[in-house]
Length: 230
Image (cartoon, rainbow, N blue to C red; front, side, top):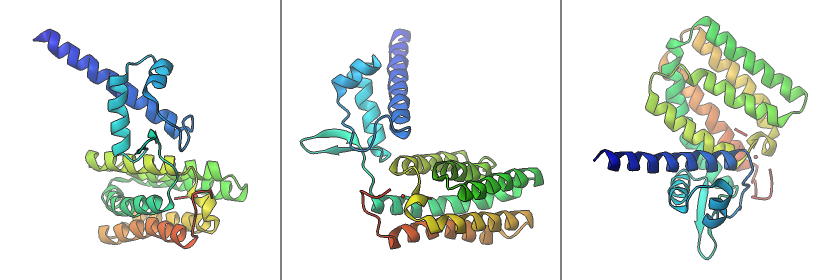
């Protein structure tokens, strides 16, 4: 019985390690959009057998990072503007609620730390540094999420942000005019949190912030060949 449990734990561990490895390579661009995930080749590269690799690929497929195409097999999902919009709209609802329930737990020093990140975003705009702006944008929102008391909600947020990180490093590259408005909206959210505004108002504003990005992307008529922010 113990041997069986140990074998199961080892299998689960290999599957988890395979998942983390493939996921990190997709998110950092090592495996770019359209890259074919050939099991035998991956097994040689990683030193892991094909069974845990297949489990990892199925998990990544469920997260939208991998797609399975007939006569081609598994490959890294390509940029899809419609999917980015869809993910942004889902994230808007999650983020609105997460911001609202995090707000009462944020002390003045936490709000000030978030403001500092937003100031760095403004500086990145002036320096025309889309990559830094996008990274700081993620950091800004997670500086609020870190106070969220609902762990399951935090997992959902991380999952949706991971999809966006893959689907495009910078949505703001596709809709540059949205970036400056996004910084102003961040300031407004922090002002509401600082003044102890009603949860329903904070949720509405945080949700509208993300939906505005989805709307801007939709109106930009982005094609798969064009670069995209969030």
